[in-house]
Image 1: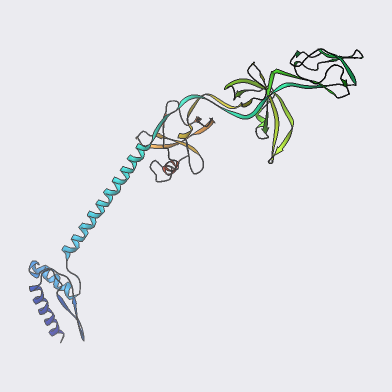
Image 2: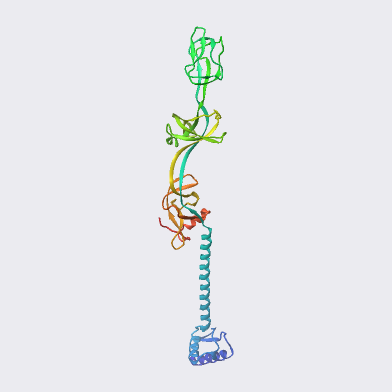
Length: 359
C-alpha cells in the first residue's frame, strides 16, 4: 500500500512540474492512513540538473520550500536597503553638523577694565540747614540782617531792648527771617532759617545687604538728572540705626558734593559707588558664556581638528555686558557662540555635536 501511494505521489509531481513554471505543485505526503495534499514553491523541473532535481524531489517530499533564487533576491534587497539607510543617516549627520557650524558667531577675548557699582537714588539737600530759635524771652529792638543776606557763624542777627544780642549759629544764607523790630520773643520762638547752598549732600537709603560696601570718606559719582552731568561725592555720614520696610532694614547715608551755581537743592540724583573692579583683564561679552546642567560656565572654542568643542572657564568680575575670564582663555583667542540658549544646552549633552562630559 505504501509503495503504491508513493508511486502515485511521484507521478503526480512529475506531471505537475512538466506544465507549471515557478508555481506551487501539489505535493502528496505519506501520513498513513491519511493522504495530505499541500503546495510548495519550486522552479521548472527542466531548469534543474539531475542532482538538483533529486534534491528538489527530496525537499518536496519532506514539505521543504525550494526557491533558492527567490531567497537570494530577498537577501540582496535587504543589503541594498541597509546601505541606503546608512548613507541617509551619514548625510543627515553631516548636514546637521554643517548647519550647526554655520550657526556659530565669533567673539575675540580682549583686555578690558571692568567695574561694578552699587547704585542708589536720592535728592540733593543742603548740609547746613539750621532753624535758629530764641533761648530766652526777648523784645526785638533792632535787626542787623534781611532775608537773602549771607552770614557767617557768630555774626550778630539782632539786638534786644535790654542790649543783648543774638548771633548766627551757622554760615550760610538767611533763607527765612521770622521776626521784626518790636516783636516779643519767647523761649523757643523762631528767629531765622540759615541754609548753606554751597555745600550740598545726597541723602539715600541703603539696605542691610549693601551697607557693608560703604564707609566714611568713600567716593562715588553723583549723576544730576536735570543737568545731565556727573560730579564727585564722598560719604560723610552713615546712620547707626535702621528703619524697616517690607522686612528689610535700611540705613540713611549722606554723600557730600561741591555745589556750583547751577546745582540746586532738591534735584534728583543717581549715586554710583564702586563695588568690584578688574583692570586690564581678559574678558569676553557675557552673552558668549554658557552654563552646563551643573551651572558650570564654559565657552566654545575650535579644536585642532577644526571641530567646535566646549572649554570650561573660571569667571571674575562682570558688569553685565562683559565678563572677566580669570582662567581658561588667553587674550586674542576666538570663542564661538549661538544666540539660542536651547542649542547651547543640547550641544553639551552627551552625544551632541561637540558634546562632552569632561570638566
